[in-house]
Amino acid sequence: MQIRRWKIGLISILIAISNMALAPKLAPDPEPNPPPGPDRFSIIAVDYTAYEWNLLTWKKKELACTVIVDHEGMPLPEEVFSDCGQAIYKTWITQPPCPIREYKTCVDTTPCRSAANKRKGNIHAACPASAWISLEDCEPVLSTSTNICETKPTLVITGQEPLPNESINRIEGTYDDQPFFCEDTDVCKFRIPETGEDGITVEFWSYSSYGDSSPVFKAQVRVQQVDEGDPDQLYWYVDVLSPQWQGNPVATCSDSWGVFPPVGGAPEWLSTPTQSEELTSDIPYTYLAANLILQGAVDASTCPDGGLPGECCQSMRSGEITRCRQRMAKSI
Image (cartoon, rainbow, N blue to C red; front, side, top):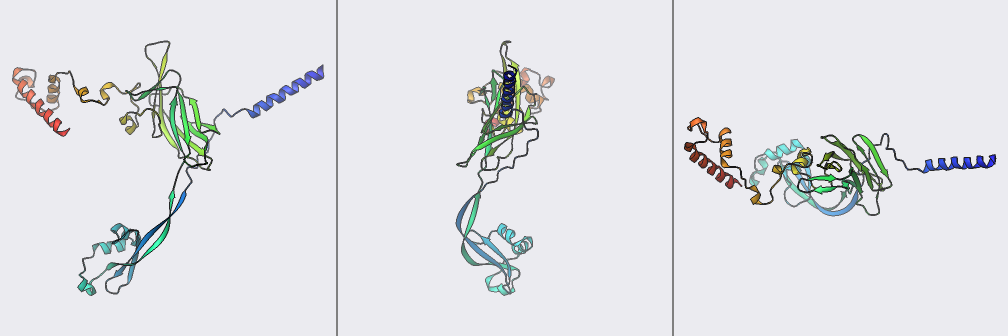
């Protein structure tokens, strides 16, 4: 009986050890190595005609420089500068015109075409891998250019390989300086916690079976939990600023300046009207008139009380407003 118990205990230990050895790595890399970056080229042979020009001195016809161009006609100034250097270029470009009948008295150099040869060249076309960032379990709010989630949001990073017969086999990156990786896959998903109002930085890249990686991409991610009035249901607003973002387009100003809009989206008064009727306002023109006076756009010094509402100023203010509106209409 004791021998049997001993055998059962030994088998249990062996099973536990084997399970530990086969378990996937859930912990992130402690110090991930920086990715190598793109390292690939497609070589395409192209036939082209090269025109050879010799810059000769007027008097002795001595060779000053040779210029190779890929077009018919005289070499361009920038081509002379590139092939001959600054000193010869400056002498050539500033020399006075030389009449053909007086060429023996001319100085400096003149271009003379010597040959047109067919050559072969190589064009190196790079096709790097890439990586994109998106969200899962969230809905875009098109009117305010944000995203709302009923559960804790999931960040999704997807690798993309443009070369045939090659694939993405690993996703790596850092989330708020904490490294992460997903092995043997082209998609990496993980839930993200709430952040501060300024958000956090995400760096991400993908590895290819070609043997290189994509460039390192960056994103600013902000997650804010909001109570929309229902204590039993909380919501998360998520905003992502990145050129690799594949979700709802963010507000133009936020993307250009790299600054998050207010949580929940920009206020309505900052939105861009889609129809001209939305530009109408029920605010009286007296408010506009007062602001024109305060900003110095209208001279109300002749009015009693410096332009306070009164009969003597109504016509002036109305006239200024009319002219202002006319100027705005012309500029538009």
